[in-house]
Image (cartoon, rainbow, N blue to C red):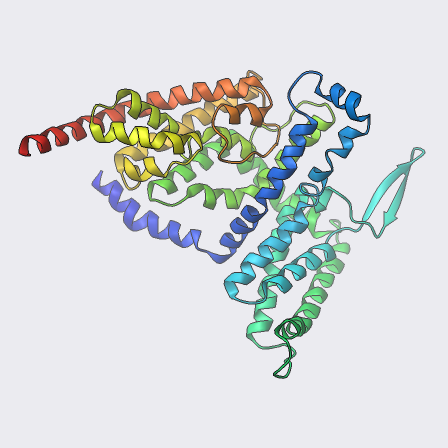
Length: 438
């Protein structure tokens, strides 16, 4: 155990801390987090449109007319379906803040750069024949979830170029006395011009290739293999929960780090599920970010089960009280009281169930959904503080999701109980010894 603790403290912790603070990963993570409220808003309207109650669509039509179903989904269109534009702006803004340069100008350049490398044509069908329409930005497609990977790459490249020109003072300098807003605007003029020329050149280069656009190139070379090998299969899911749990073992928010890397690959899978529901088809994907929401019952490590074990089985006063105090936060997926109060962080013994519990229910949940015993995640995003069981129902849109989370809790309780029992006995002996000395 001492060797494990030495590895955690002296090898893994410094590396993970450095990774978490890497400016580009931090900008991607913070950019997605800043946009998350808008995805939740879009998801609420999806729930209104497709609330999982028989006859709901017919009721909407009867009360509000046949067009209401498409009208109520418009907030989803302006959040999910042009998400790449927002993400390009958000990541550019966050990265520029780290460089302490004009973040607003960087965000605008991120949007302009992304549009410059993205198709502005679409094909429509009229009377059975296809027609190419130019000078149009489509809702969805490369401007939606499919363009996320290119959006974050372009955002980083454009902001890095912007920072380079600013730091090298390759800007138009205004005389003293000019208002700061005007000075900032003219400082962005030369860098902005060069950046847009670079993006235009990128567009021109890819138009000479079979890919035509950088989006298709990135999708085929990076996104599709990454999605197939890591983001959308059982082994990738197990690896994800392992990485998140391991990072929590050393006190780092593993979800913030790992999700920030994998979210660009999960979101398109989630969008595919939503599209399938709209078209009345079977949900294609099991692994989405919402699949992992079902895993983290009470927070990372599924620690609400630990709370229940402490309340029901602990005999030491400290652990019994810790369980009671951790119940309310745990019901809203806040796990810090358990992580730092038990403690789990930097505790080699507790590292075992913290990793084993989520991995076990990941396997069970995957096969339950793969065999259609449990409904798959619809793609709807709900607030991460949504209590378990309610969360399972909303994520899957079916009662089976709620039942699955109950089974998950019981499984994790069984995994944690032997370890809690060992620690509880030691703690009880400590308390008895302290009482005798007193």
